[in-house]
Length: 145
Image (cartoon, rainbow, N blue to C red):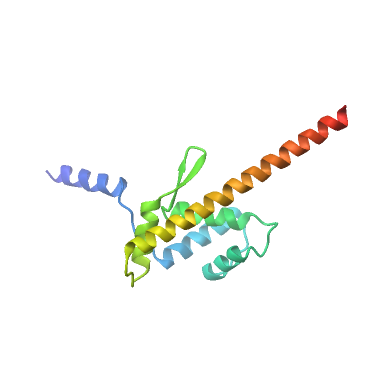
């Protein structure tokens, strides 16, 4: 019977139960990710401001660190070659992080808006990258003719 309870508990812990993260967790993840990607290290708040302002557009390491933090915190999941936001985990984290929430649907709609904006920007970057690649290929072909 004890074995069954332990097995059931472990199954519940490893399947589908999101564990709330604290600011201290995020700071620890940031330190680990900064070390992993050899990025410039600042406090977590300074780091997020830097990313928001995109202070160093030539340095992509801060985006790698943000992705790493999201992966470690369970808000992003690798789905094959594609990153997938764990929307339910994001909503839960946001609801618990904000002590005063008049309507949980406000958080859900804001999160969805931000994720759509992120998807739109990612698609724009992919289109630009494709255009640059096609343009470079066309130039090479015309030069060789």
